[in-house]
Image: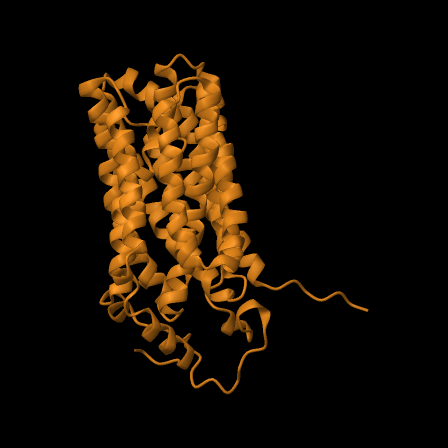
Length: 417
């Protein structure tokens, strides 16, 4: 008796996992390069941190373009192009002769590359699942956590063995080959395979092959979207500060370089667990409630960082922060799908992620410049705690949920609200 074939949606999840692993794993190696870039270009910590902020602004902000393009052209094409751009940007950074050239190579290359690939890949996963959407979304974006675990120690080893320039070149080759190759697994919509979400039989009586839900214009005019946008904008001011400044913070507190880099890996371990377990838990407890809990959890973890100094306390912070950060990234796309349907989910996610783009642009670089002035990270950490609590308060307010029922009804009926 032949074995049943696995649901093809899990192949899409595997492709999205690879894209997030390679793309964000490469981006989050940046902390391992901060000291070398400061030394070679005689730069301040704030000006070096701006490299990451520019890249982050682009890879989240570009979703407003790549999302609608994926809805129109298909997610696979955008994901492959994005991985090739990421590899090219890392390779170009290896040849930079000034910090301004690093801004252009890393900032534009990695920023545009991840921006092209991320939203299309994650958006495609949402269409392939309904009952297990939180789990599938969590598995897809757990590539970010695994990449954060694996890639910074790899980068550190390459820097020690080859120097930072050849390390960037090697990472660029890896991103282009592995990332683009695995992105070929991504497919846009199960309907093209004659399937419904979760592998269910396709409803042939459906009035249209177009997935139901709101258009981008309809979604962004609702109070539900405004609440999500405001929460993500405010919360993201502090969300990415650890990815740039945790290693320098640890070095400033006497932690050995090899152990300091492993702290990013600890964020990756926690993030992977958070994406997997909290994504699945969100399916049962309610994804709206889970999203609010993620912001509160990040605030709690940052409070631990505020009093941490030694390697063990910093590792505890990194693990805890990773869990809630990973849960936030996993649950957010599923909440968008729940509220607005799948008709233009990539485009809606893309618009929403512009909020994260502005937070990423300002947060890490502002923390670096604050350190340059005060030689302390106390103020940036406290500001990050307040930002996450404010984001949770916005999500808890009834006004942030306005208009959701109408759009859910439209999603079920296949008509715009």
